[in-house]
Image (cartoon, protein in one colour):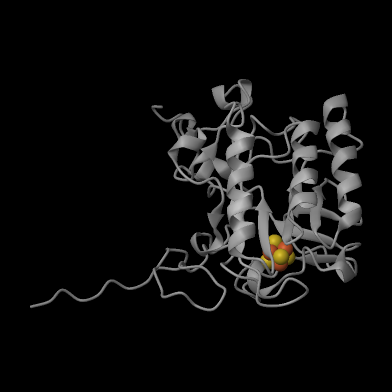
Length: 282
Ligand code: SF4
């Protein structure tokens, strides 16, 4: 006798066929409760690195740009707005190693709960060349346009890296970029201020480079982590977190030029309370 099928538990990933522009997986139900922090004396915090150093890999281990079909938060292809029809790719760097310590969720990074994704090693001398080749391949494959989501984990780690993206935008007119950065113009450290300044210049080209600044306070072009909906007219809570839409592919608000001056608020998420991550055996 066949065993009865297991009931689907909320938040558990299930495979489903390619559904429009959405990913192969149903999204995780967000953990709305306050996320756990790593303690300040945790080696990953002290050394400024991922909790999973074994997942930091050079470009020889495979593609750097990953199709959004594999990411339930982005989806595979934009279905609405100014970039409708464009496929989505994602890029993942090493969290904390590439991020400023001033990031408001430095210890709470949701990478603490993501032990599987490959983190591309930006210290590898071939990193930028390999990434440029991936972008060039996507540009050839999608002459009408494609989108890169920066960064699933990690951040812009140098001015040179921002200029590298400026060059890619120049070389590939069909390239579009969206994402978030914790590099702030009002940061304490000079390096972050310089990187933020370079990003700020590129965001003047918002129709192609829509990078929001993660900030503790609400403001135009920013993203903010909140514990609950502040219910302010210029603040939009990410509708994918409240199950009003499936993914970025079906939302398109973060890069919508008409909403650039609004703040996008993300409900605090990460490893659930009580599941404090342990240092893995690398
Ligand atoms: S607001 Fe929309 S586009 Fe922005 S992260 Fe949420 S789902 Fe994606």
